[in-house]
Amino acid sequence: MTRLINPRLALPVLSLVVLIVAVFWLQPRAMSYVGINLLFNLAVPIALATIAQMIIIMVNDIDLSMGAFVSLAACITAAILPVNPALGVLLLAGCVLAYAALGALIEIRQLPAIVVTLGMSFVWGGAAVLILPSPGGTAPGWLVWLMKSKPPLFPMAIVASVLIATVAHLLIMRSSFGVRLRALGGNARAVSRSGRSTVALRASAYGLAGIFAVLSGMALVGLTTSGDANIALRYTLLSIAGVILGGGEFTGGRISPVGAVIGALTLTLAGSFLSFLRLSPDWQIGAQGAILILVLAARLLVRQAEKRA
Amino acid sequence: MTQMLSLHRAPWFWAWMAAFAAFLATWSLSVGGGGGGMALLVAALTFGSFSVLTGLGQMLVITMGPGNTDLSIPATMTLAATLSLKLMGGMTGPVALIVLAGLAAALLIGAAVGVANFTLIRLLRIPPIIATLSASFLYQSLAIWSNRGLRIKPPEVLADFTTGRALLGMPNLAWAALAVSVGFWVLLNRSGFGRRVSAIGQNPRAARLAGVPVARISAMTYVICATMAGLTGFLLACFSGGAALNMGAEFLLMSIAVTVIGGSSIAGGNSNVPGIWAGALFMYLIVSMLNSYGLGAGVRLLLTGVIIIAIVAAASGRKG
Image (cartoon, rainbow over all chains, first blue to last red; front, side, top):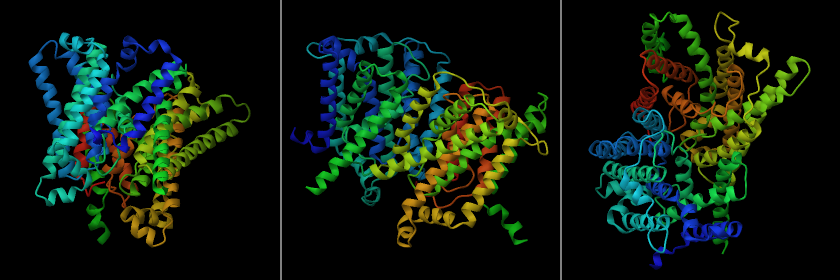
């Protein structure tokens, strides 16, 4: 338990707490079960996408197709899963396998992940348009029930976030599988010298990310109850920002799943905070860019202060 | 003679072959539609010019080595186009002055974006991808805010110039892009700056030890890349009758794709200008070929992505 609260998490936790206090100060009515649920509702799919992006960043890559892929998963969930559950599950599993294959391709041909994922964003986008040409579809009943359920004491969004953080933490920080994946980001050569296949490892990292991304699409549909080929395009930025806000580094496999979920919560809350401030919608997206830059600047200052101390 | 024989070894040779094949394939498909080879060539050169102009800038940045990619090109294009058209729309006086002011504004906005990008990379010590991505959202917001949904028409002279074909029946835009390309070729192959860019891309440590001013050179590449994006945004807005918020969207992938397809190394240190043209023409022709098959938007997007990845995978070198 003590290892959970490491210095890497100090800044993310602090930003979240400051933001929560600011939101409650601006809007005291938000300080209730319903209010908190409304504030954090959309955090669940964002947290799942952030974990997916974190796994990709963990192996020193970056995924610019996250938004398009989550949109595709959402389209399959909304258009096919309610009508033909077997086919829907098959397609979603196919998406995960495609992701794993992508990881293998990137490792075998030593391709830059940005270019490949940028190209894949067209593929996912095209597939999403094919499956759901115009916004619509319905969410499977059980999914809506799950996403809109009201557990006692804490709202669903908080319960789900804690669950996601715990599962990701155990999987990536505590299991030997997770250690091997992080090692791939830390020192790929050492991993291959130790007799592990880097191709299999990168493929499984991408496959694992694919699972979280598919879950993100499903959770999103459970909340919005319909799909759209463009529904989650902004998740590409949000997921990268979430990882960074949560204390993740771009190289060396140094990431924090708990931090990533906190980062996703912070980003979701930042959106509400900006609208409480009555900031013009023109600046919403720019504000997210600015927050990202500010956090990176803050982290640099903290690190320099640590070095001096 | 030896040069002729080794032509097929030039990095851009296969890209040109592919572009030529795509031209023939699309042409044979469009004959029935009454399009004709000339119309196809003009369209390819016109739309290809925009990809060439953004691609040249992106190529320069990518040549700097792994991790160097400018993701702010689409936002920069929109910002430069919006602001320069707004400036020209509000000006009165001699037409030449208005046009010059608009062009200068677009180039300056581009350069300012480049300076901002590099400042972030340098000051925050973050990967260029993250710096340009997060900054691009600021530029985008700035463009949305200054645009306010208005669509300001470009001056008639500029609209006529960008859609016209004054010389040899070829589009003016292609001539302009050709002139810029020649400039880039000279810059990359015949100047100290070009040699330094390649040196940094091939081995940044060795370049630094050899006394190459790495920071100054990479600052210049980011400024040039963003200035090219500003220029492209300006021309595209004049061509299409006004700036639109999503006008640059396709040029992020396009600028990277034409660089890689053209035979420049994605790992840096190796660039070539003729390949950019081949890549740009190839990309346009492939998309119009998919169009003439009568495929829907979904299939077209899907195949565009698959083709790009297939080419990148086939042409891959060392990891970026």
